[in-house]
Amino acid sequence: MADSEDALVRQYKRYGTMKAQAHADVQAAIASGDYEAECDASDRLLACEQGLEKLNDYANQILQQQRHVPSNRYGLSPDEQEIAEKSFSGSNFGMTKDQMHQEYATQKNKLHHLRRTGQYRHTTDATG
Image (cartoon, rainbow, N blue to C red; front, side, top):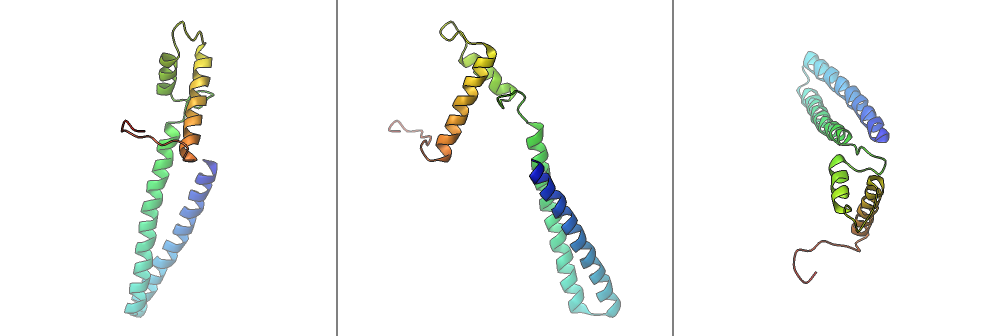
């Protein structure tokens, strides 16, 4: 996430600079009575504000993702750990919780890989 955060900081600075310049241009155009320049600068100011809104939305998404960071060494959330423990419990498996988590994570990663490469697609019909 550090790369995303660095990019966000750079974008915030960029928009801040552009917004300050557009604001100064609006003020200068008003002072000189140049209606066209005022409209142009106002459009740039509005575009900066809209860009900042989108950037804020993106930053909030990143924060939400960081709040849901998996909590164990295999990258499993607490819910996934619980599912792993229920899936591999019983006398047929004889696994420790750590082994259950590891196996679940392995299978999860395998499924993600198969989906990314197009080797697996989920279907809901009986013909597969």
